[in-house]
Image (cartoon, rainbow, N blue to C red):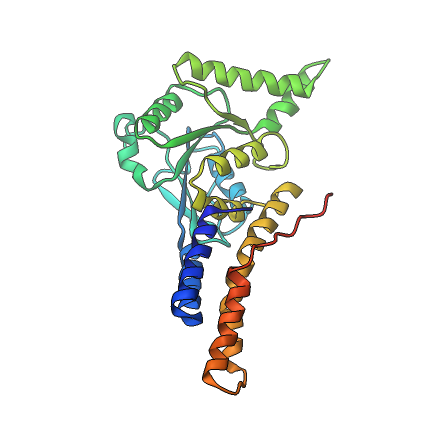
Length: 299
């Protein structure tokens, strides 16, 4: 996965190597690696009581509702305040479970200010039914604040199961299309333009639209945050695993270079000039040659 953020640092390392030698280039590499590790991604999840947003928070983080790190779930309102849930493996990625809009503590006209909207990279608005007035209200407020938002229609597995029982001639694709169109029409009726609606089952992310949500988020995030999101996503299908492999392979050259330099420092060589010549040669091979990427085998 080519990342212009990587390419920029490759060019910077080339300059450091040519101008100041191997030590300066290695320091630049380590600074870059720290920058990557420190990239923060804050995702806000909101919706009305019973929408399944807490379960979605857990599924997005790759854990189930019984995990001790899970956001509490239940039929009654379990989110009464803003709660942060760091990713268990990538603590720089945080999902924020927000209370429903329109409560006494979070009135609709003050909602975004009360939850601290400026910290979030984007919002996901979750509903287990058609999206309602409060959902539309928050979507418009987010839009006015120049932030991105996405609609997730949750509990699709339940809808499919219920429809299958109640209809003699059941058609899963037609049912999904009807649900999606119903959501879109309800939002457009309230003047939400071109709403992005994703049908999701938090208990089985490989089904329905979660892969489309992932692709949309990856495409619309700033370039330097895309790998941060990608690596934190659950491994819900083979495609996401391949993407993660590519993202990690693109970082191997950076992470290997400082260790190679350290190994060279311990090597016994005949002179100081020879020692520096070997260091520079190693880094030149690393950064002055075109990067050849391994093409994943099909299947």
